[in-house]
Image (cartoon, rainbow, N blue to C red; front, top):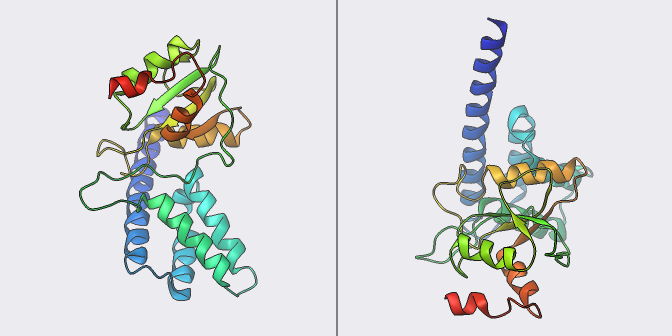
Length: 216
């Protein structure tokens, strides 16, 4: 019975976190709509996150919360800090998109600087919608270069995020694979989270160079 109750509690906690993350993204988009992030909005967001213990456990949201804490530590918000927070919220909410486009994938968890990619013998996980071709095409090119492909796991070396997110993703701008990738990285696993564009750039000079262009 205790095990069943634990499962129910875990399920309820997960549903609560999902709802709170969705609410957070909605708030972020609302705050950024006028192109200005005010002191009052920053302070309110920090208070909201401080009161939302479960959602702060999300590794992506934890990064944002840390930035807010550091910004407000001296009770002063300079313009560089404001610009940094604006960029962080923009990235988290996938808010950088044009009319008619699908929502772009979040850039918040991408490795900076982006690493050089070694295809031979390394595992790749692809997630999202890719503008350079279908996901299976990206996977096939990776296999031809000696890499392996599969779902997100501790042995994943590169998590490649497609240029656009789909409505199948849990929170519109990022999904479970990205969350799990950030979690693994925070625990010390050598996983690099990279963009589709960086993956394409790294194809230059390989035997697969030009193949994605032919697919298009």
